[in-house]
Amino acid sequence: MSPRRVFALPRQQSLFLPAVINPFVQEVKLAKCVFRGIFLVPIRAIFLTLVLMVTWPVAVITTFMHPLKGAVAPMTGWRRFMCRRVMAFLGRSYYFFMGFRVVVKGQQASSAEAPILAVAPHSTFFDGIVCIVAGLPSTVSRTENLATPIFGRFVRCLQPVLVSRQDPDSRKNTIMEIDSRAKSGGLWPQILVFPEGTCTNRSCLITFKQGAFVPGVPVQPVVMRYPNRLDTVTWTWQGFSSKTLLLLTLSQLYTNVEIEFLPPVTPTEEEKKRPVLFARTVRNVMAQALGVPVTDHTYEDCRLMISAGELTLPMEAGLVEFTKISQKLDLKWDNVKKELEGFAAVACSCKGGRITIQEFASFLKLPISPALQELFALFDRDGDGTIDFREYVIGVAILCRPANTEEVLRTAFQLFDTDEDQRITHEEFSSMLRSALGVCDLNVSKLFKEIDTDTLIIYQIYYSEFQAFALNHPEYAKLFTTYLELQRYQALQGVESELSSTNHICSEDNQEESISDKKDD
Image (tube, rainbow, N blue to C red; front, side, top):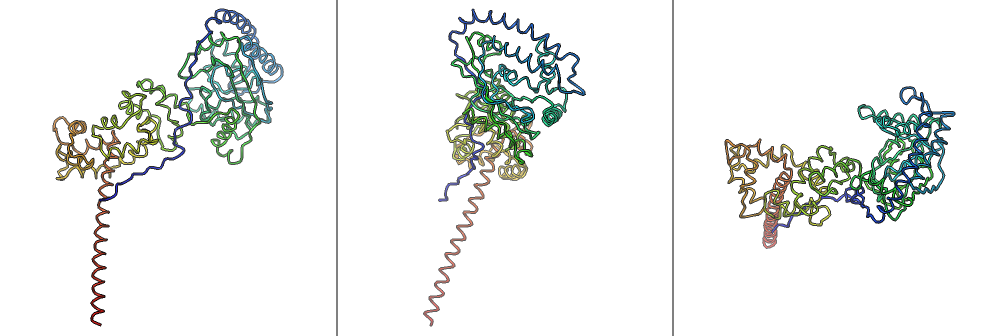
C-alpha cells in the first residue's frame, strides 16, 4: 500500500493571527453618568460657550488676511504670539471646563530638533488636547474642515497641511508639503500627525502611515493615556456615537489624560531610504512605552469590518490585517471585498461566522472525503477545525488562485472528458469525481447543474462552462490539481515499483551467472 500523501503548506509567522483581534471596538458600562450629568452638563455647557465666545474673535483676528493657499508663509510676530500663547491658553481653558485633568511628562523638542510630532494611540476626538499642550503645531487636515462654522477658524490658526478629496494629486502634494516644512530649519511650527490614521481602543498600535516618515527627519514620539476607571472618551467604529461620548464625558467629575513626550528618534540611512522601516521603529518605541502590542491592522480593515456587518457576519470577520496580506499576496481591495461576499455566503449561518468542514462540504456540494479534508486542512491554518475569513483569503490566494491556470483547467477538463468528444456528460462527471474523492456512492446532480449553465443542451458541460465555473469557484480548481497530483504520485510509485522489481530480477540473474561460472571453474 502506498503511503498517504501530505500536502504541506508553510505557516509563515508573519501571516499568523495578530495578538489583538479587534482594536476598533469599544464597550462602556454606564453607571452614575446620567445622574451626575443632570447637574454637570448644563454648568459646563455655559462655561464652554463663554470660552468659545472669546476664542472665536481671537481666531478671526489672528487669521485675518493670512492666506492658506498659494505662496503661504509661516506666521510670525504678533500672529505667532496669538497662536502659541493666547489661543493655547484659551484651548487649555476649554478642556479644563470640560473636566480634563492633564498631566504632561517628558520634554517637548524644538522644531529644529524634531520637526515632526507623531502622536499615538489615536482613540478619540478629544485627542486634540495634545495640540493645545504642544503649543498649536501644524496638523494635516481636510480642506472641507476650513468651512466648518466656528471651528473652521480654529483650524486655520494651526496653519494645517491641507488634503483635498477632489484633487487626485492631493496625497503627493501633502507629502511634498510635509517634507518642505520639516526641512525648513525651524521656520515652520512642528507638524503633528496621528500616524495610525483612524481611531482605535488603545489596546494596540496599528500600522503607521508613512507620510510623516518620508522626509527622513527626526521624529518625536508622543504617547497618550487616559487612565480612568470609566472610559467615556474612546471613539471607535463599533461603539457609542460622538454626541453620546461627549455627553458621557461631560457627566464625569473629571477625566484624566497623560501626555508623554518621548526622546526624538533619528532615522538611520536605511530608514531614510525606506520610510516604512522608520515608521515601524517609531511605532515599536511607542508600543514599548505604552506596554501594548503592535498589529498590522489599517483603515482598510475598518472598511472590511463594516462590510462584514452589512453581510450579517460578525464585524470582527473583516479584520484580516489587509495591508500586510495584500502586500504579501498581491491582493486588491475589490478582490478581497468580493471574497468576503463569497465567504459570507457560506459562513453567515454559522456561529461566529466561521466555516466548519460540514459547511465547507455543503457549500461545495460534495461529501466529506479524505481529499476534501486535505483541502480543508490547508485552509485551516491554526488547526482549530474552522476557517475564518482571514484564513479563507490566504487559502484562496495561496492554494486556489495559482491552480486556475489555463493549462490546469484544460487538463482537468480532459480528465473528465473520457471519450474525448469535447463535452462532459453526467456519467463522466460522476465517475471522475468518485475516483478523485474516493467515494463510491456519490450524487453530484446539484453540482453538475450548477456548472451546466446552458439551458438549451442539458446534461452536457462544455469547456467554456467548466472554465467559468472554476474561475468563480477556485476551491474546485485545487481539488482538480490535487487529483492530478495524486495521479502523478501513483504513476511515479508504479514506475519505482517496476524499477525495483526489475533490479531485483537482474541481480538474481547476475548471481546465478556468477555461481554457474564458479561451478564451471
